[in-house]
Amino acid sequence: QVQLVESGGGLVQAGGSLRLSCAASGRTSSGAYAMGWYRQAPGKEREFVAAINRMGATKYADSVSGRFNILRENGKYTAYLQMNSLKPDDTAVYYCATGGTLGSVAQTWSVGYWGQGTQVAVSS
Image 1: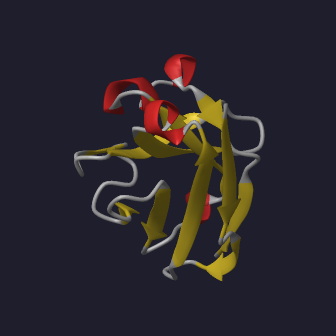
Image 2: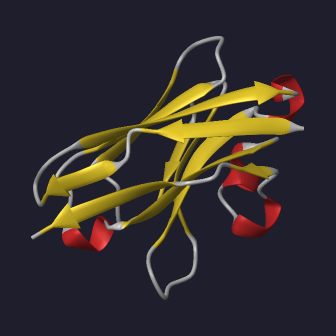
């Protein structure tokens, strides 16, 4: 089992920035090789945002590429999502996710573990 704890959500004006954090614990060596973020807006399906593996390889959704940056502390199972130039369309509950590979974290159906989510609201 892997436990995930997210933090850093909140309310921000359009054009602003927020930094989300996700700390993994438990069987992280096998279950959290790759870490990522998803989001789910009201009435919409959960969608992939970004992912990073232990080697530092990353993957981003087209909608956030160039604005969001996923980071990971070396040797630790902690990941961050630096969100810049936020838009009202970025408003959603953001979920941390982990899996065995970068590819598995980037697809909803193959995510190993989910966090509880943290709310991000962007006002216009």
